[in-house]
Structure formats: C-alpha cells, structure tokens
Image 1: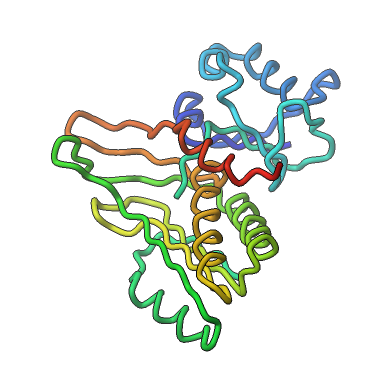
Image 2 (image 1 turned 45 degrees about the vertical axis):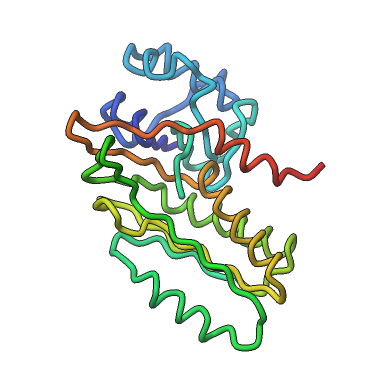
Length: 83
Length: 150
C-alpha cells in the first residue's frame, strides 16, 4: 500500500510518499503509526505526539482505531489549517 | 454544487457576479472571501498552501451536501487556492444561495468553519524571520463544534 505524508510531517520525514508492505500485526491506523515509529528514528521523533497526527484511508478521514483494511492509500498529516 | 481547487488567482467580484447571475429569483446569497493576512507588526510575504486534492474534494463535497440538507441551501460553491500566495490575495471564497438570508448566512458560516478544521490544506507563512507552519487553533475547533448536532 501507499503512504502519503503532508506538511511538516512530510518535511520531517523528508519524503512525500512511500510504498510499504505491512506485516500482519499492523491492523489499525494506530498500529501503522507505531510501526513507522519503530522503523526509523525520524518517524519516531516526528510522530512522538500521535494525537497530532491525522489519518485518511483513501478519501475518508478516520480515527486511529480504524482498521486499515483494503485501503489503497493511507495519508498521514498534521491538523488541517484550511480556509 | 461545486468545489474548485486551483493554483491560479481568482477574481472575487467576477466569481460573485457569475454566481448571482445563475441564481435569479433565489432570494438570498452570502459570499465570503478569505485573504492572505499580513499585519505591520507581523508581516507575511508569502503564504504557501499545501493540499491533498483528492481528499479535499471529497471533504468539501461532503460539507456542501450537509449544508444544503441542513440549512436548505439552493446551492453552494467553494473556491480554494493552493500554492504560493502573496499578502492580500484571495485564498478562499464561499458562496451560499438560499431562499432567505439566515439560511444563506448560516450555510456560508458553516462551510467556512468546516474548511478551517476539516479540509486538508496546510498553510506555511514566509516572514522576514523565516518560514513557519501555521498551527491549528483551538478556537477554530470550537467554531466548528458549535455546529455539532446535539
């Protein structure tokens, strides 16, 4: 699946997107965030306050407790500042 | 109903006129334009907006549909820019059409409050002392939450 990053999260990770093969134990969005944090130090630092990270599965914004299921794209980003 | 995401500038007056011209007989239209803020004590030379376009279209489309159902709008249009904007330039325009003024005011206000917190845009300000990401504000969450159904 594809992960897309936006705004300061994209900058801190130094990438806008990546393709990943998720291990079976990664079920929810929250699991994914933890898995990414365990995987590298920059991600661990950038997401040390997971409550500041919002997520969307395909084109739907979801809470961290939502299972990733068959989503093709998961986006992770800071709180939005539109308007 | 329409959502337009664009990098190019838009002319708020021309957009308003076009919206009104297509709305003959409706009764009430409210249009709101958001501009890049730059104060003498806190100058901003450029505001750069990052967007997740697919999600923005989905989110704003949902908000417009809710505004139509909830306030009885006849139609609503949201124009939102992304990319690099200079101080004073229009960022966003919300236009709501309804049979009566209160519905038009409420619909436009609801849509703007929603855009602040739930549309996937992120603002970065360029200032004389460097660049900074604009932080989400608690009062924007509170403004959105006042529309929560009880």
